[in-house]
Image (tube, helix red, strand yellow):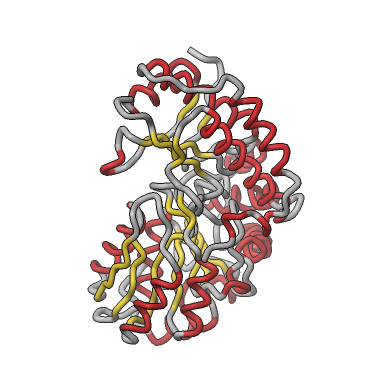
Length: 395
């Protein structure tokens, strides 16, 4: 067995030592001044991370809970929404909307591809009754980055709410909420924020808050108006929060943002270039083409290679834990996570484990210099301004 394990899954992600220590602190009471001070300090950093002037609500749930909270607080039963579906989590938006008894219009793209803003605009112009567009920023099941900036611009012009699942994007790639005109942005704790699962974060634009104030919430627990009022008025949550996760959040935000947001995005872009270059240098096919996520690289395995065997070999022989494909891609895809507290050495180890796992499964990975080439790409990418990265400019 290897002496060290490396968690390269698309969540949960490794935890920095200061965060682990913060999580181990003695319990605080969530209605006392010490906790309120922590909550208000975390709010300042959350607004910076989300790129918003408004409050960022902590919710005691996974990211899926925040998705449901958004749907139930922004839309009444019978309203019509457009769901951009190009993977498992796009499908989840549709299921949540249907459970709220919304009328769901689906815009599908093949798994591995991004939806196009022009197609969303066409759907909205065809049907002015659509009041919201629900989509992922980063589709975790495929490693695709959707053109959220362009979609939000379309929705602004057509008076439609843009509701974005940023669970695999916030803290990993740029998604400035106010600048782009996003109406709802949400995330979970266990990815870019380097925390254990169990905490979600959600922010609304001013026009989304106006819509929420007119909407009868479908949830007693996830009542965003009450959560907002508790947070802005008292520095507290409406119900008992996961106290130690909030304490850990305060520490993780300080750790993440110590060198500024640009440094965060530069690092993530460079790790993405490292992973994608290494995969290509092995002669393997990248599943996400032009529009690719910054926190996850999806690899299409050669025909006849058992993905479960590749993952088992990587874990048992090299201590590297990666994820497989979902639904019809199970056994055909390996997803390498490079989120949160992951560095170049972790990703290089993941590439080596992937290479050896494919060989163990009876395959062949081409060039022997794949690690050298991938590290050269990583070094070069560290000099590229994140805003100029090609996957940020969708058509």
